[in-house]
Length: 485
Image 1 (cartoon, helix red, strand yellow):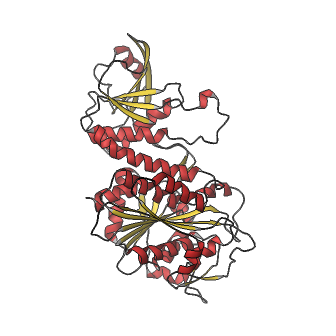
Image 2 (image 1 turned 60 degrees about the horizontal axis):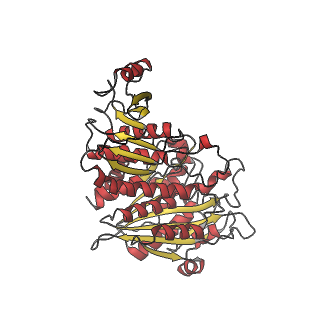
Image 3 (image 1 turned 60 degrees about the vertical axis):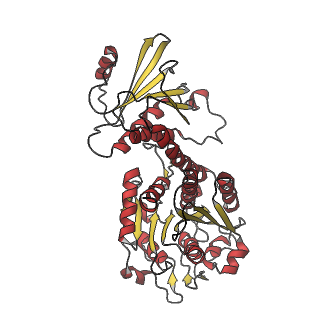
């Protein structure tokens, strides 16, 4: 979706839209349109849309309205994004190629107008590479949104927000691709291609290099697949003189469960078990594109979890990079085995002051929180509050969950330092407690379990059904508020 800016009202496209709050339509709206809106019970409520046809010098044109609800209360930004998303969704396959969003007399600030444009672009994203038999009326026709009479400063702000949109879209692309296309090596290649020329420094470790470093936990997951594992590190050094911040993502490019194999029904969804790594990659692209004044390292542990004759078995004991031993009770609890070595490596290599890891780690978090919130576990109250605030600001909602010594006994092993799973209850908590054992003293750390938020089976305010790009905006906002603030 292209975003353009215009001040001239000559040569307007046939489709013009307006974002309105709850209440009467803006002054200057033709009387027949006002009457039609009343007859259709359009009142500017959140998510409502209304369309009228009007005649003018250039012939018949379409005048569309999208409701943002009561803009005097609640999160104005979220309401404006939702309204713009509803407008774009309505006309995405309408046959119209251009939508002009008219900001004249809207009373919106430049920041709010930028939110409208971001909501429009994010909602327009679709990945149709493999849809070869779509009928013409099913194909997206809308290619351009023109911001008409946008508030002063909107265009410069959009230069930043467009970088956010690009990062979200990259994450969605990685998550959407099938596992025969995106696997550890091709994930790395896709990131190298997309980040080329941005100034991001890239380091890639292969299987032998990881073995030399003692990453027995990560390599144990990977040993059942013919697709070789990789560790990918991406550093954006937009600021010097401080300890860096690390974002670490679980990148299980396909998860069969290994020997503890998953049921066949729904297993195709496990192509998005690399959602944490995809979020990290999208975030790094965003930070580089907008030239963030921060020192950030993104690390992705990339594997496939497959059940061949060389796969690790339940009962195996593996040795992690920091020397701790792990009894593998369930090979389908593989993400924490990947993350623990990635966490150790980034601490030894870069000495970060803060780490945020993201992972589609447990089904238990979906049972707890559904698809509305990701679970947050943290060893630092300030970091937790900063991430929570960032999530609320952009709509990537978090809910803090407990961790603590009381849960340690649930993952103690009689023959190793720990087990990779605890009992059935508290599954997302014991997974986080496992990861906490690999965080060095003095490092502020948060674990985000995003299993319920990276992929949604129904359209949302700013995404179609499928990959959401959850987490990119959250991490970018955290960087803005905390590292650049």
